[in-house]
Image 1 (cartoon, one colour):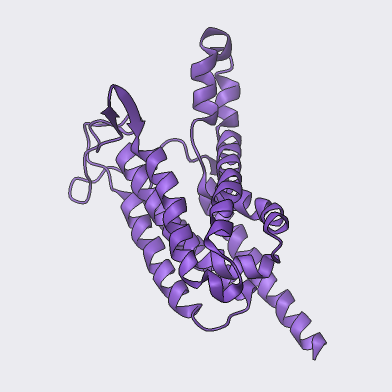
Image 2 (tube, one colour):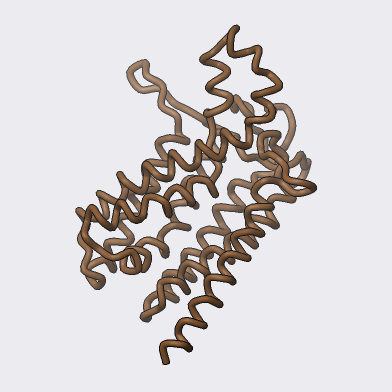
Length: 259
């Protein structure tokens, strides 16, 4: 595809540009309903900065954890080419890590704009899959997170520094974009009526995790990591589904005890 382009002799990577665009588009869409929850566009822009930082830190941190075994095996590279070594260890992102980073940054964001976390979740959660959908288009242009070879369903990534350019690969990135857009539309329509914030979180977590677990079977990139017989993301997907179910059960028990 087209991982980058030049303007006035300077190279710009579409992966990074679409990542930034995704955050601002999500903030813009969220602003359509933010006033109903007492939030304004300025507060959403602050969220782009704080939650975006959590996304970046969390995504890179988990990516580095996934790369840790390979980094240890090739530790001799650090003395020969330290910058290249660090790029390989910290040069990518894992979405689940980014999502956990967003959740970790949520209390700081809530304190900064003086809003409670349930209110912020009602505004932010419905647009998270929209932002993710745009980011996956960036992955497609970069050629990262690609699928397995397939002569009929595959596409070439001739300019990618990550994907092999001479064989057709399944564009799993676009499949995941479609998955996220479907989740976004359903979640946006479903949240038109008053919903408990934990129901929104659980719906998003469970639907995405099931979809992601399934799509991982089509992935063919070598940087996903493995836990037992599963990819790292499949293992995390199981944990996310279990955590969301536990969250719903605890909330249900609390609701019963309150009555």
